[in-house]
Length: 475
Ligand code: GLN
Image 1: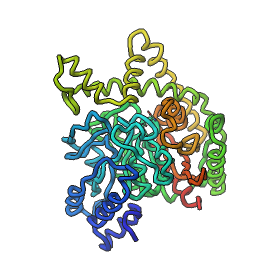
Image 2 (image 1 turned 120 degrees about the horizontal axis):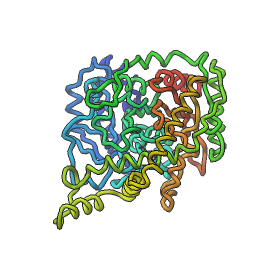
Image 3 (image 1 turned 30 degrees about the vertical axis):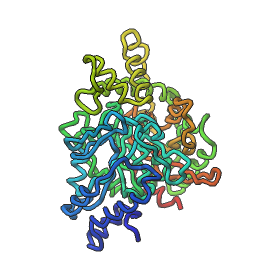
Image 4 (image 1 turned 90 degrees about the horizontal axis):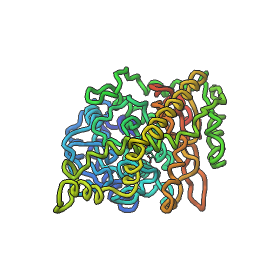
């Protein structure tokens, strides 16, 4: 059996039994990358020599000993590029330090291998905003892989990675996972350190696992989670054994179905798949409860004020002086700033910066930014109230199957609306997971559809309980 198609759990067993070695896994992945990446474009780069060197030195007794992990290209791994899929870094930026997740994973024995493509600075939901290359959906190559962590999803889905890390600001782990038929988990805000993740919107960003199975997501999160003195928003809360939660079943769990998530705009075929999953979970002993999240309709507008506002501030550090591309022969300092940024950023990034500075400008600040923060609180309160009634919430990830490539070219705002079901988890800080739920056949392609499970802040164990039960009964 080819090693690259296996899960973390299986490979760990085989490594511990000395049937295989870490370098064999790396070699097998490299062969697959050579064969497929030119077409699929999941990776921007990979460093085989560094991975093989790490494979030789790995401690097999560590929890992830010998497992190669792909990294989204906005997470720093010392000595490797970190382009954020932007022209700004094309000149050859090399990360001078490790992100905390890189440090934690390598301490757990994992081997960083491969830099995954993404929407530039994680802005988008198709990976079409990458300034560097196009990524295809391995399950249906005429369709988008989703985004912004589309490279990570495509790599895992095509077995060019055993598992990968993504980042999720408004759905960027869950939506590409859903579109490519894999598992993706956005941890609760503060569960995983953001130190060394290139910031998009700091009050929303979280790093999380993208894997073939729910069990693999639990294995990764056990190593990723935990406090970090370098990120003051990272919580000092105990990290439970997530793998233990996998076997708890769903008996007695109350699962909420929010009316607002099953109404207008939802493809009826997606609705049917999600409802079917809910009914099967009911048969396993869960109780289904209809709930309401009344402010859901405001989530997209709220997010597209807060996220660009934070992005415009975070991206001001890219001035042509400290990182990346610097305009040639500038007339003066302002010319250096403006030309370096004009040349370096793509159109979606510029759109967000303009939007962000506008909503933060004096005169408009209260009308847009302050009001959006108030609505954010209302959305948070919706979830607090819902979780007084239920243990978890079930919904679609995306209202439609993955769309065709280039279909949103004329109207970039079209994709914003499709974030409707994922954004609220970021605005409210709760955790959420996307698990494959079935496929829809369109013009001969089987398009993957994901199921979203949401749980209260730091309630990841419930996600694993429901996710692994669903995986078992899905058939
Ligand atoms: N699609 C959303 C956006 O474009 C979410 C991106 C993300 O989660 N990084 O902002």
